[in-house]
Image (cartoon, rainbow, N blue to C red):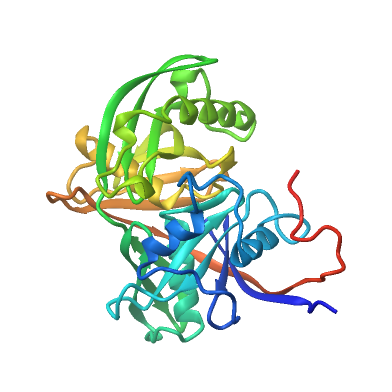
Length: 346
């Protein structure tokens, strides 16, 4: 008789976007071959390198089990905690979603920082800050966890350097010709003003925004500006950011966005890595002055604040601050007699 498979998770949301954490070692799940987190990510993605093709392997069965119905949903996001590249980081992570794997995830990094401190994996004071260093496929990032009265009050995510790939790339869509900016910030993002498509960033406009995002992503699939010097793992459009400008605050600009990623998924948060990409574009345009913050709002009304920390030959170093909250702890069961197997997507 085949054994029942159990998988334990700790779930968080960061500004409304879910993040399901699975510690591979603690759950005795199959390890992913590779000497670095980037190599493990490439192994998980498999041949083709797109991150969206069908997967094979025992650990990918776990991903599908957790992201598909009836245990998950099409908007679920999560990560497998894996060993770091070296002892300079506390741990590594492989980010995943319904279509595969990603090289960066700002909201997930914030959730992991909160989880590491909340569970005692990384020591932290009752009042003050604790740094959690995490190796992700795009490099080493830091989550600074802010503590107040013995509780986690917020997290600041310092990303890998962001750099601009191209500006004002013409793209034909069903809503007309638009000009798109391309920036790399751990993953590659295309950025376009929603008004160029005759749209606003609102819940009512979501179906049209998603269609436009999918069209732009497909149109830029082979554009040379989407190539990253780090190789194919970091190349190719991951997300399309459709944004609109709102009245500024005394502290800097205020924008609302919806980020459409993978195969039409929508980020419920303002998108952490996408915020880094927007910061690089705003800084180059002179729209983000020294000491100013971008108030970045999601289609759900949640917010991140982002800032440029320093420039350099490798790009703009950015920080994004938000709040992550635990939503549950789960033990999921896969019964070998269940004909649905790892589940389904609608």
